[in-house]
Length: 99
Image (cartoon, rainbow, N blue to C red; front, side, top):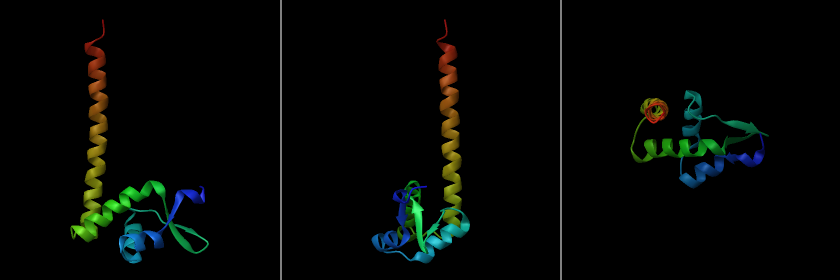
């Protein structure tokens, strides 16, 4: 893993005006993976959209951590179902137009 793919949690907290403890709570529930490099805390770039979504849920909408976990789980299920639906539609289209 390259350090250039990491974002410092301290910078995220300053930018979004949030507490580091919120990110620790997300880490404890398994929603975000925190990486320690030389005693500094980071997340991978790919996790930033999820973290920003969780920040919006909590700080703007007032959703507690348990609610965020539930919403995250439901969104993952929805993505899985959409992917499955797309595959089934592709299979159906393939068989309908087969000569």
